View 1 (cartoon, rainbow, N blue to C red):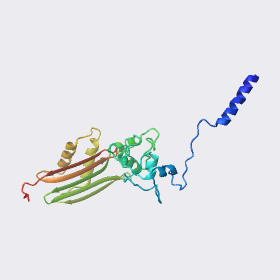
View 2 (cartoon, rainbow, N blue to C red):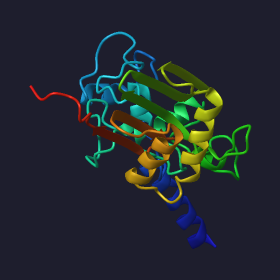
View 3 (cartoon, rainbow, N blue to C red):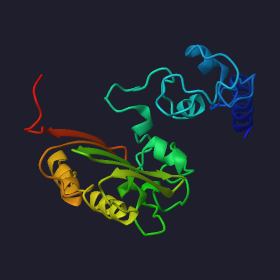
Length: 236
């Protein structure tokens, strides 16, 4: 019994000397901007409101980059040719920028519902956010006809702008086209098929010039340009 008591006392003394097995270093944040001073020093970040600044212009503030463990002075931290804003850090099916715009947490895959990944959350029409088009810009010139279309999801709501001369495009037609492009995301439709789909939508034929920029909520981005020259144009 005495041996047991001696062993227990010895163990208590040892633990008190060594201290807790697990200890977390206190984060020093003198300017109270929710970013550790050591991180600011590492990347040489100074000045007022630095938490809101975006020195590498990837769409993510210094505070977000800090929380996602990214480089605030490098647009593509992991050098995979995808800007940090279009990366899906928490692998929930939505890009970092899309999550911020929707009020979700890009550092947590389940930031809104415990049993549903953020990418599987659905909009009012029942479409998962991971399958939606985030932005679509189309510019067309064909003779005297011109068309500029801008479609974007901002704070979860659609924004459509149309400027046209010689066309009669409606917002409903733009929504129909966006829906078609959303249905194709799973199969990763080729640029050629996307171009043909848009050409058919606008009945393009003869000579024309078209530029397309398409970005999905999951970060996939597609750029397409095509020019069919007018045979009547003189070569100078």
